[in-house]
Length: 68
Image (cartoon, rainbow, N blue to C red):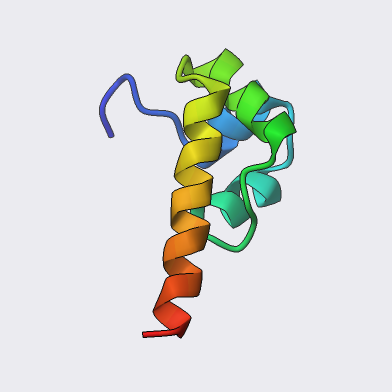
């Protein structure tokens, strides 16, 4: 692991959420909510809007796959 990479546990601590919450998002079992997007913005520096846009694209791709 590179020195600038965070473990799931470290990220959860910085976000002030459970490790399970981070794991569910990373594994695609939970969506990034507006609240989580704001937390991610604070911790990782990427805008909340970009986190929500990525979530919307991912959710749409999952639904689209069901119809193809």
